Image (cartoon, rainbow, N blue to C red; front, side, top):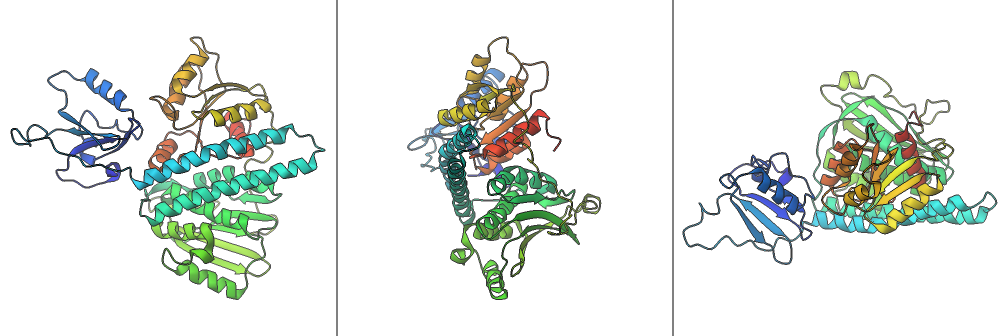
Length: 481
């Protein structure tokens, strides 16, 4: 139904749809407007929790008129209002046909499940790398090659699922006003360790511009450009920066690779101009996804190159009408790859910062990933308490809990509480603020939007050990960046 995002009015029924796991999967706009449901609907909300709160908050005279209709196979639909007043006397209740899981959630679930073993493998490689001494050069090189292979698998899984969802019309932009610097810094935090592993330099220029677009899809587009450069001919460094161009911000990705001949550049521009679904074999997965996302968001896409001097891909994003003049006034012009340019490279030095004796609570519902996190964080000298759910975490920390320095949680958890709720509720047990971080393999846009709006930093599985360490350092306040 995708009703939670629709704006259609009219007399459509008030419906809640629950999956086979008993959690809320979707709803109609009419349901979201009901007084007893307004502001309470979130993806993944357990049916039992909603039913209990409705029963406890209403008397018998004010209880909502509700039908529970079972779906073929699994799942259920709650229909509010109209069941007794609109059906003729003696008529059978309405028959609900089988409603298959929307393809978008099927892709998201498959992507999440594939990410879990990749996440564990990436963390275990990082743990094993830390046990090798400085003389184990060949073994360390093999581990780095394994880590790159895992990262490549992760990138291809993401790209294929995102491309299928995009070409199937399952991705709908959420256009809002955003500070572009948040996108740039999240990208830097995630990508910088991948360049460091290959002995390359990744530089991000801060930018104070305010843009109007879907920040999550813009970030995914830039990830595609960076991944394309990393797989291609980049030899020394890559720079991500911005320039102000009238009423648009030009976000540029510069690489120091071999560049393109005029003939190859012309051919690439021709392929980028073709309709969606064409030219994928020539462009490759990353650029095909970049092209599709740019068109979905209505963004301009340009490419320039010179043989022997590198390649520049540029995305033109609309500036916020209200804040364009003041928001893009500082730090918006990037000088390219000239030596001596002002640069910012997050995560630098994170490998040498001491985080030993840090007390961390880890909540992760996949035992394999939980064990890998405990091994890696323990190797860094951290004291770890691990749990697979919010309830287990509360039980593990006990009635008189010793304060934690950090809480790391998966987004999806066993039980009624998700990772956001778990961090917030556990943090309330202490007499001082406790920073939190969401570590997830989820790709469902609704879930990711909810996670970003929570205010907690978000890292995607499989996460590079250096990226995880850099994020921990930032949250502990040891790194001013």
